[in-house]
Length: 198
Image 1 (cartoon, helix red, strand yellow):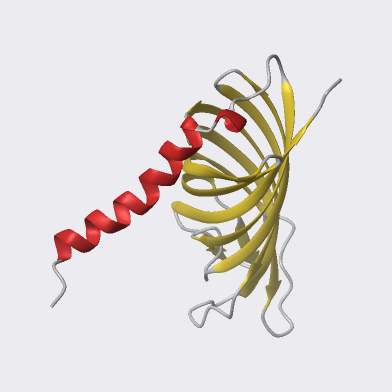
Image 2 (cartoon, rainbow, N blue to C red; image 1 turned 45 degrees about the vertical axis):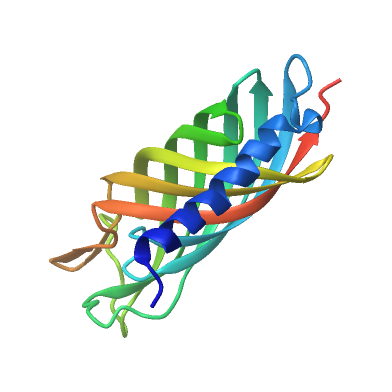
């Protein structure tokens, strides 16, 4: 029988050692001054919709020294249906996000603000009233690590935890139903390319 402590140690080392190697690799040193990065990722989303969703994103970052500023466009799609929905179903969402990050070797930590709109369809012949609101606002943190696979290509994995500050509301007649939970999580993996600003 495998020892749980040894399994945990192997997993931890498998995550830490690539980061250490990345930090010692002279090719991984960032160029001097400000430079850009292009990033594309796929995501698994929990809490932004009544059911689990998937998503894609594209981002542009300005990076200097050990800090970076990110501007990101995101699209989400719900996987399946919510059997407990009374008024309608959330089918997807679109969002924009901005984040300010701090980098240390191959690890990064960010503060993230996200603004978006949920797409929802009412059941049967019911129509949402004008007082329905599709908008949501979230605030949270992102943590992750990046690994260089070539001189100009990095793989980046991350996990985000959000508080949903403004929740979308679907209102039909006198009934109302909120479409998100109070907290949300996003896990993703993607590719990053450096971009010269000169």
